Amino acid sequence: MSNPFPGMNPYLEHPDFWPEVHHLLISVIKESLTPQLRPKYRVAIEKRIYEIKGENSLLVAIPDVSLQQKRRPASAIASNAVAVASRTVQPLKVRIPVSEEFREGYLEVIDMATKEVVTVLEVLSPANKRRGEGREKYDNKRNKIFDSSTHLVEIDLLRGGEPLPVFGHSHKSDCRVLVSRSNQRPIADLYLFNLPDTIPAFPLPLRPEDVEPVLDLQALINQVYDRAGYDFEIDYTADAVPPLSETDAVWADSLLRDRALRG
Image 1 (spheres, rainbow, N blue to C red):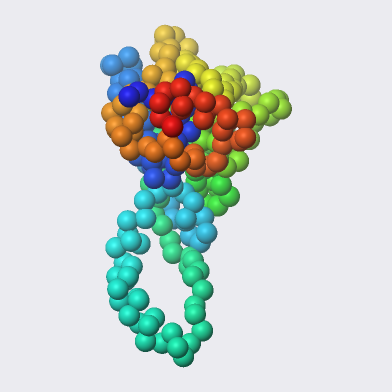
Image 2: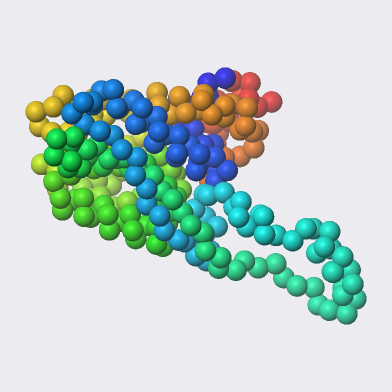
């Protein structure tokens, strides 16, 4: 079954799925743009690498494989607990500030003749929208782009966290796409959309003399959903994470029942 939602699927934001969704979406955007932009431009996948510590390390939506491998077997913990349970106070379960290395992909459109980065395309991750090093590093990069001759496309498909700042509007939305052309700053185009809406298509800014390709983000999200087989993995009888608003929860429940994904 294809993506049952008309726009962004809120279940893809779950920490178990989003790291893979982010990776696959970056890849399919590159695959979509490359044949439209060659030979003048190259679309390159780049990465930021940083560490997140403390409570935020548990919220960035990355797999916890390394920690799982280091945990002691449950049987060993249980046997020790039995031996001392009668003589000691039962311990509390707490979290310690273990560092997590976080790799964050993004795209650059590079002019093959001059090797200049013409456009940067970012798909935001949870770390970009929460206080901490991830947001600070991204915000610094964002401001440097705004002060340069490089265009920025910023895709935010995440309901959770605090949106990146823009000025001149008071409208709230679940998701957004920002298209900032270097020659039009400080004015930029902001596409707002909610869960019941189809994700809007938008033009990718390039050099003034170029025909700009239109990025059909909805088709690409649906492609990621199909390729990854999320129809087999997602349990639509469970609640979405982060939780939906009361209005969206009623709407999603009706939609999922209509598609026989809930009893």
